[in-house]
Length: 158
Image (cartoon, rainbow, N blue to C red; front, side, top):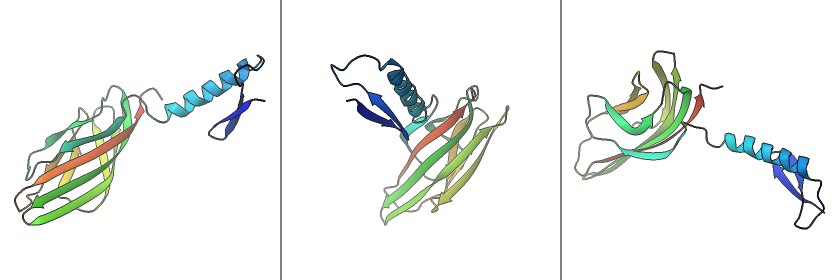
């Protein structure tokens, strides 16, 4: 009796150790379904969960380490992020989360942003695909600013 393996909504008969041969086509179909499913998990150029420092009172754009898209390979991206800013005196915490959508036009990048909360951090992107930020001045001592982000891309080979 075979073992039933499920990938998505498809079921596959998989032989148990010592069972008769004859499952080659079923095993190949299962391997293809698993490969297709895994391709949706992480694509080349996706950005896995990454964190970087957000500095206080930055009026000139600052590049966010690791938040970069290769315009030779990436057509668009959808990034999720959270910014957390704290001070120790007075003790405050500000949080903003959201989504940044980006498209490469063939010569430049354009982005749009949806967010919840207000951290005083504004995002932009260079023609080279580097996401940057500016930040407002947060009063108080012991400032710590962090961004955590990840991104899914659609690569040029669509």
